Length: 349
Image (cartoon, rainbow, N blue to C red; front, top):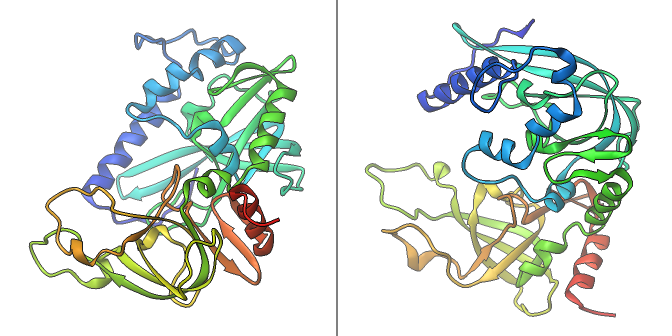
């Protein structure tokens, strides 16, 4: 079913990527053996625990991903909007026309919610989108745990918006006879998995707090683009994302920085705050390794923005007394966040 006929203009590399993903989607809907031959087409076989474990093991998923590895379990747990324990209700699909001659599709899954382990979701059902290859081994009635994220709809990606399966196949566990089977844990007791999830959620912000040398709460007053590498032709400053960012310091939480203003280097788009915004950022002091040759090296601020697993997780925007960021997607009272950070750093009473 085509739900949106909007045509999206793409660059050639993006078009190639979409074609590749479309091929993966089409070719991946039929289960195959490791040697590429068609698997037994019995639906019972497709949806068996044995088949689930075969297609969702670390080796199987890492082979599909190619280079790199998924985020660690603790991080995935900390950044999920929702972690749903529930039962598969049904499957559907959505298609989008990306160009006049190219249509690609995703699965839509509806889950009956038993419990949201983050505590934020209160509806009886949740619907999320994912690639078909990530659902082999599931059938209506199966009990699962899913790690869900949410994002706003984007102009260049018609599949953005609403809920999606965080980290794809990595973000789902099948539950059979009280045990959970997935990428990070194969046959863990469900209650033990829930304890691990609750522990990770209780330690949000800890990892980056311990990594940071300086943690600044204040207001962004200036963003100055800094070109790092030579360009063949003049570049409009609005397209230069490497920047020196100036903050008016309200409080530096480690107590080591005493000035009223700080300038740090970062990638503008990694930081959710703009000029005039109140923001909390995690910083270090020193030099960063860059590709060479560089220009304007002497203009780069000595303090620099840091992150852990994802580029945007080192900044929190403060709105109406609540701080919003990757590990607190629905916000946390800024005073509580400051208290947590100081406790992790061993500062104060």
